[in-house]
Image 1 (spheres, rainbow, N blue to C red):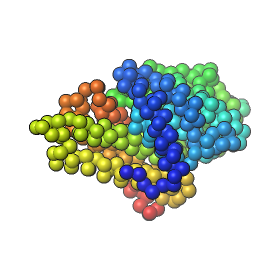
Image 2 (cartoon, rainbow, N blue to C red):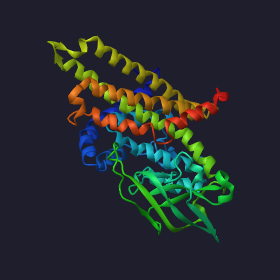
Image 3 (cartoon, one colour):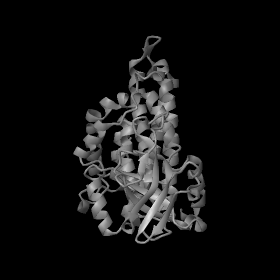
Image 4 (tube, one colour):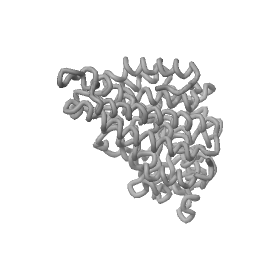
Amino acid sequence: MEPLIPDEYRDLRASVRALAEKKIAPFAHDVDADARFPQEAWDALIAADLFAAHVDSKYGGQGADALATVIIIEEVARACGASSLIPAVNKLGSVPLILAGNEEQKKKYLSQLVKGKGFSYCLSESEAGSDAAAMKTRAVKSGDSWVINGSKKWISNAGESEFYTVLASTNPEAGAKGITAFIVEKSDSGVSFGAHEKKMGFRGSPTREVYFDSVTIGDDRRLGEEGTGFSLAMRTLDHTRITIAAQALGIAQGAFDAAEKYSHERTQFKKPIFDFQGVQFMLADMAMNIAAARELTYSAAVKSERGEKDLTFYSAASKCFASDTAMKVTTDAVQVLGGYGYVSDYPVERMMRDAKLTQIYEGTNQVQRIVMARHFGDL
């Protein structure tokens, strides 16, 4: 179920799948059960230069294009959803820098990112989720510096990442046009982290609140012009929602693989349950929708790389369709496995729990449908 793509992408998939099956999948169960950070995956991705493969080669990265990055995240997610958030979050956190940073900023931070210093993204707040422009975190100019106060909620890999793209209001009266982006370092005085959220899924990926208590940084940490932060945040999501689609796609594929294999092994009424038409129809629908999600996601990745005008629609559509597909496929995979699907001896119940989040973060699927409706004219 692979689209017509050049051999280099097929070779990349084979390479990442081999790595994931050998060095990530064996730990996926314990990472979830113990809600512990997937250090094995972190180390393996760094060693294989896949930690932030999207970074340009002149900063030490692989220069992987958007489609290659999608395939990397997809294959890691097929083995372990929590581990796939490592490359996905690193792209999310660093895309604002790539889009709006100056050369000095890029050299300083991207070169460290590829060596294993993670990059997280701080946009959401307790009272500013889908309505991100309602944020309360403030950045006030003080001479040649900025003083940041506030907090950010639901931050993936918080505490593990070394760097954070932080969106803060620099002119509250201007609303969305008064938001500016900054780079904050974990080591900056006044940065602290809340307790780990106890989540339904993605338990191995730390999700924590990030607090900024009079964090003072130089103006050289500002990304882009003052007041352009919200626009930058939305442009970032146009590119990174596709990585969530890739993640959902990988989770769905992993669940389908497990269910299809089990259907040939499980015998009832003296024959494999695969021989029952009801099961065949379920598996056929799963495979069909995964194939469709893959085509849409890969198309969105190509549009991201080319900067095409309909990117916003395709980015939202890929994230929405792939995550809805992942939720349906994983639920059906649990059904195919029956009682065994409901216990943690098999991975599909973990995948079902992980799939749910892909419908929520980086914009709920209800918001994605609003975004799509607003961009019909780009098609």
